Structures are given as C-alpha cells and as structure tokens.
Amino acid sequence: MAEKYIIVTGGVLSGIGKGVVSASIGRLLKELGLKVNSLKIDPYLNVDAGTMNPNQHGEVFVTEDGYEADLDLGHYERFLGIEMKSFNNMTAGQVYKYVIEKEREGKYLGATVQMVPHVTERIKERIEEIDTEVLLIEIGGTVGDIEGEIFLEAVRELSFEKGRENFMFIHVTFVPYLHVTNEFKTKPTQQSIQLLRRIGIQPDMLLVRTEKEIDLSSLEKVALFGGVPLEYVVNLPDLANVYEVPQMLYEKNIHVLISSKLNLEISKEVGELSWKCPKTFKNLKIAMICKYLGTDDAYKSIMESVFLSGTKRPDLINSEELEEMNEEEIRILLSKYEGIIIPGGFGSRGIEGKIKAIKYARENNVPLLGICLGMQLMVIEYARNVFDYKEANSTEFDENTPYPVIDLMEEQKKMLNLGGTMRLGAQKIEIFPNTKLHKIYGEKNSVLERHRHRYEVNYKEFENMFEKGKNVPNKLSISAMTDFVEAIELNSHPFYIGIQYHPEFKTKVGDPHPIFKAFIEAIEKNK
Ligand code: GLN
Image (tube, rainbow, N blue to C red; front, side, top):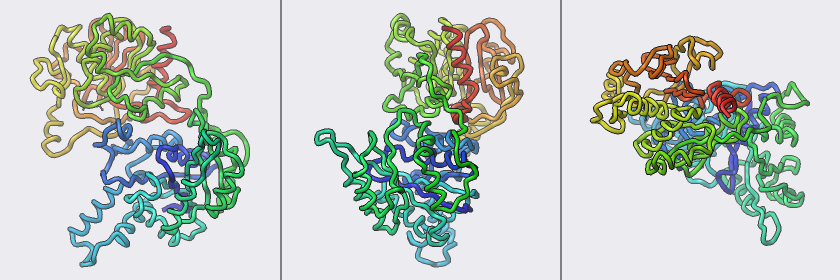
C-alpha cells in the first residue's frame, strides 16, 4: 500500500510525453529523498505487450521477473533507477481476465458481476499491492477514451476512500500553437478538463505541453477554465533531451507544489539533481541493421542505452534493403559507419541482409554488437563463411537446414509442448575469465541478465566451431554460459561480441550497461 498517490492522466493527444513527464516527476521526488514507485496502467485488452507489433507500439520491454511490458516501464526503470516488476504494469486485459475467471470459479457467490464494483474493486486491489511512500500511477491513453474510463472511475473511488489529501491528480495536456494566426489555442485543453470533471475528477495540477514557451494570458485562461490555481498550471515546452525534464520540473518548482498539496516532507530543498545524465554527445556513426523503421521506439532501450553512454543515437538501416545488395554495395553503404549493432528480432524478414552486414563487420574490423537474434546470426555467418557450412541456419528460418547451428533444445521442445513459449527474464550467467566480456563486466564471474527468446546455439552438435573461454584462431570463443551458450566473441577483432540476452533493458540514467560503454570505447579506439 502507498501513503500518497499521484495520478497522471493525459489530455488532447497521445504522444505528448506523458510517460516521460511522469517518470521525471518520480525521479525528482526520489532525488528529494522520497521512496517512489510507479504503476503504468494500459487500458488495452492485451494481457501483456508480448504479442504487440513493435512498429505500432514500440519495443517490448522485459522485466527482471520475465514480464513482457509496454516500453513505458523502460522509462520508469531508467528514470527511477529501480527494477520494474510485473506488478508495475496493469492492463485492462489482466483485470477482465481475473474478474471473469473468478466469476467462473463461482467466487462472486451468485452476485451479478459488474464494472462497478467488481472490476473497479480488482483495479483498486492491484493498486494497493504496491508498497511505497509515493505511488505514481500513469493512466495510458487520453481522457475520453472508452477503455480508460473504468480506471479513472477506480482511482476516483480510491481517492475518496484514502482521503483526497493523499491524492493528487495531475493532468498533462497539450496546447497547440497556430502559426497562421500566431496564437496558442487552449480550447482542446479546456475540453479535456471538462471530460475529467464529468467523471468526477477535479485536477489539482495542469502540466501544459507546448512546442515553445507559452504566454501568460493563455495559462491564465487554462487556469480559469480548469478551476486550478494559476501557480498549479505549469508550462512544459519541448526539450530536445528528455533526460533534462526532471531538472526543468525542479526549476519550475513542481516538487514544492506537489509536496505542499500532498503534505510531503522533502529532505533536500536546493541544489543540482544528483543523477549523471550526459549533456554532450559524441558524434560516432553507429548503424543499427533492423526491420522496424517506422519509429525509434521499436528499439527504444538500445537507442537510450547508446544515448545514455554519451553518444548520439544510431541510424536505423533497413535490413531488407541489404538483402538485395552485393558485397561492394554493402561496403559502400556501411563504410560510412564506425560501429554496427544487430538487434533482437523474430521471423525471417531481413535476416540475410543482417548476415551480410555481419560478414562485412567481421572481415573489415568494424566493431559489432549482436544482441539475441543478432548473436544467433553471427553464429550462422561464421558457420557459413568460416566453416564452409554453406546452408547453415537457425531452424526458426529453415527447418530443414543441414547445419542447424541455432536450434530448439530438447528442454525447450518439451516446454513448447506444454504451452510454454519463451525463455523470459533474468537468469544467472557464468562469465569465463580471460575473455573480453569478463573485463567488460569488471571481472565479475557471474551476472544476472534478461532473456526473451526461444532458440539457442546448438553447441552440442557444433562444438567444433567453438572454444569455451579461450581464444583460438578461426573459432568463435564462448565467453559466457548458463546451460546454454550466452555470449560469443573474437579476440582478434576490435569488438566482435554477440550476446544471447538483452543488456539494453538494464541501462539506467547515469549507469548505462557496461556492454554499451565498452562498445562505444572500442569504436573510439578503432577510429
Ligand atoms: N527469434 C530468436 C529466438 O526466438 C531471437 C529472439 C530475440 O532476438 N529476442 O530465439
């Protein structure tokens, strides 16, 4: 159970940075000595984000406990610096599934099961599962969405049960600027506040997102229509770097306004925020060879891991385009880049293009980081071009390959029969001494890293391709293992590392995952 609740809702448009603003509020309060946790509510009917298309919805973020979450949980993990768990995300799908299953089990004792009180009761139970001083609850979507309404009703009820003095409603809204008439337009914001009021929620604070600094008279209008004191109406203009938002909130005194509304004691009043967020960015040219090009969000955690290591974000290159190219064309395209990342993925689209990029990076000493599918493709490329296993493949892409160097292991086949699908979440990995990876991890012999995949390196059948913990010419060196191969490397290359797990999910602001730091150092050294 939490002592104080901050509910963040959004108005007018989605995509105005409500997640970043909420995570930044959390960070600011944490900086001031409060214990903060978060709950992201997603009003969609999916039970989790595992099956959602990254092009539409952004990456699937995997938590330490193996939950497949919305990418917003990644913001919270990076901003708050704490590990998110499955209880930090609630979807409408989970709530309805629970209520319907409970009804089927006869546990409602003959009652007519209804949205209010049964669904709202479950929502409140989920909220109350989180123990912390301040709980930030971000409700996804915008006020007025049909599927979000029941969550608003639940938090409204809870605010009365817990005492309105323990609740703060913050509405993040957008005020567009009309270039033709040279003015800000507050009408959509007024209307979204009215929608909130109609369900019985009076916002305590309005965070007004704009393209550029707004004029005072527009803010006064919003305050008047919103019934919110002017000092609680705060303008947040666009910032190029999202990690500067907590500082901006601090400068605008948001923490003072929140603590006076909620009666919070803040231990630290003044000074700079303590987090070490890079302010300048190296202009290294990194290419990410991938298949989702619609939005950076599809590879959010990788992009942010590079950025938080102090380097501008990688360029996305279409792996399908590479499929059609010959070696010379690949060389012309990729020679502009100083480092290459091959991210995770599922399905065969574009994999031959990625394999070509891997060959180019291996042969031309370009630093290469392969993550999950990326690592599997590094093994396939090596089998085909160094071991002459010409048709080597993963059975994910070619069930009949004569050289299944990536395959489902017996244990997994059993798991699949039982309806289990993937290896998910954190597992303890052994790192072999005298490898590059061991050095990268500061000589740690074991680490916890997060997984999300089905297929594994077929080490048993292709042992001859590998050397465990040792670097031997013309073999891939295995640098980490569980029961399965977890990482490979080539010592003779400036940086040729493939990992079966996802280091990008463990980056925090001020503490990017060491593999990204090492990758970037290798690129600089190689220049
Ligand atoms: N498709 C591969 C597998 O299932 C890799 C998954 C991934 O990259 N996350 O093993």
